Image (cartoon, rainbow, N blue to C red):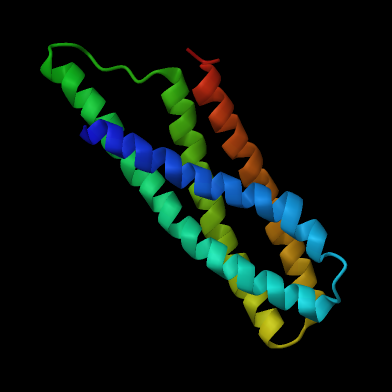
Amino acid sequence: MIYAALKTIHVLAIIVWVGGMVFAHFFLRPAVAQLEAPVRLRLMHEVLGRFFRAVIVASLLTLASGVWMLGRVARQVVQSGGRFEMPLAWIVMAVLGVAMVAIFMHIRFALYTRFGRAVAASEWSAAGATLAQIRSWVSMNLVLGVVVLLVTLLRWTN
């Protein structure tokens, strides 16, 4: 029962995170591109601020639930007299997941902070350039997220 609850939390957090990146990148960004820079950049600052608060929670829930599930399985194997060897798909998932969290932390605490300062100062060219950097890093995280999903769901590495 606990494992099922942890897995549900894990999957829901990933859906929020990866789904939000898909929405922002493929739907929101193109829709606001026609707005004038001050309006577009203020709007993106507000939207990203809300999204990033959700991603902080989602990323921490993903890490915590993943570590907990991994620990439960390892403990059960060892308690039954076996030797726990983490499947390659789990290793890929864990490594890429940690990389995604690190990239997100860079986006949120370095780039988004810089973006916010530029928006507050009405420095629209600097804000636009920083938003482009955020978009590039989000694109990278989105690719990593899709790779994790493919590896996990298709079990290519098992």
